[in-house]
Length: 164
Image 1 (cartoon, rainbow, N blue to C red):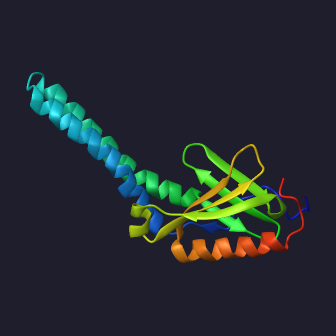
Image 2: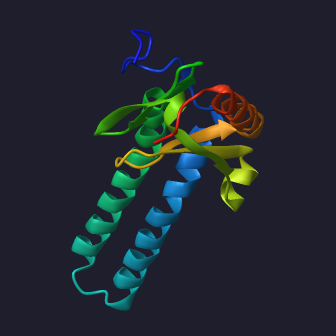
Image 3: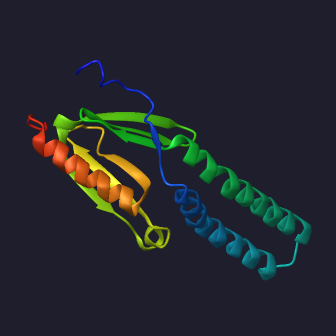
């Protein structure tokens, strides 16, 4: 590897729309838990104070999570591509930085689910021969994801190497 290919913080943040996407996506899990707790509360009114306290505690933790987590992830998640490599940084509590030399890239894919489509977001997956698995860049604007896939496709096609 050349000196310019080193593990470092990538330059670009994901789309700010990812904040809303992560918030909505996480809210579904909290909603299921809160509905179950309301059912538990209404199913038996014994120990009402304890049950209301647990429900209030769950609601408080849910609000805290839905406010902090998306902002935190937005500040951490980064990506960058150069003519030599793809760089990513992901995580929340545990953060991970990865680098994939262009010559090791085997496939480049983009994908988006229904909820991501509503937010105008897409994900790019860069598959290499690494045992660590593919590099995923989540939360890109659709246009940015398409440009990235196009750029990586052109760059890898023009880069000598066996991608292993």
